[in-house]
Image (tube, rainbow, N blue to C red):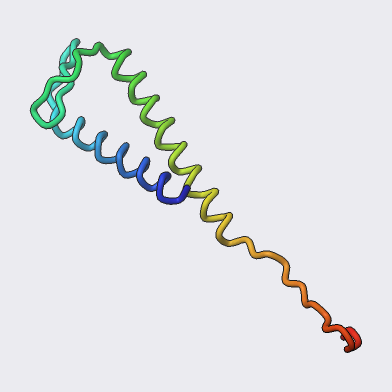
Length: 89
């Protein structure tokens, strides 16, 4: 889960950075392009909704990383077995 969460975080971050860097000109209609390829033409509401979707994916990745880190920190309680023939301590 840790690797999957980190992969989600990196992918969303890279995609968002590429979209912002390639689309600095604005207007009532935005033509979204990534690496020279036009993906879609969106209005302001569509851009806002896609930002919400990217934020949700980012939060899902962050949650996966946090839960994997918490799972790794938890330790199992150590039990000491008594040897047969020896009294327990």
